[in-house]
Amino acid sequence: MDDIVKAALKKWPNVPHCYGWLALDARGDWYMRDDRIQASGPFPQVKGSRVIHDKLKEFIHRNYLPDERGAWFFQNGPQRVYLQLEAAPWVWGVRAHGADGELAFEVVSHTGQRVSTVKSAWMDESGRLYLDTDLGYGVVMSMDMDAAASAVEAGLWAPQELPFAEMPGRFGYVLQPQPPAV
Image (cartoon, rainbow, N blue to C red):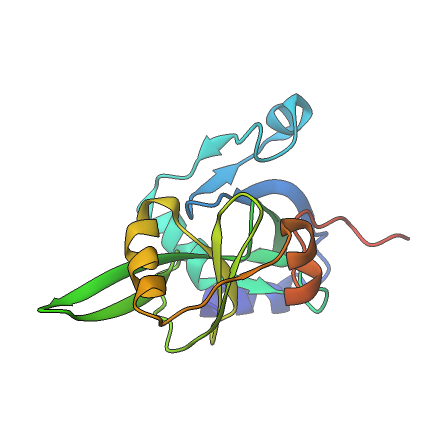
């Protein structure tokens, strides 16, 4: 977490949390969802405005965390901005490296963090591939499925089937965080 964010938390400790204004899609893109967009429909059917400013994305990445419920948020100064997730809290890019039959695979998160260990692989009923890693649980970007399929064919990952609806409970994350009941 950025030092400026830590300082803001100390200065304003009781700022109300924000819900529904930021979302992460299965390609690792962030979307701003103002009141008008939220009223137009649920995420991801109505996405909102894609965040394209590099410095803002870097700030979000550095201050992206889960709470004790498994609800992911962006700590924006003193305010927690809870995210809506299309698929999972992490979105993985997969790259294949090497030649002459000696392939190595690199898995990198949408925030730029490298994965050291893939613990298990999962596939939902739509054919999306998910990896449980040392960083956490996430979906593989659709554009990287060729490299991921090569890792499966090489025997590095053996995907097990799991319905999408069961994934958040099994891996401890919340797709659509809501304010706690008062």
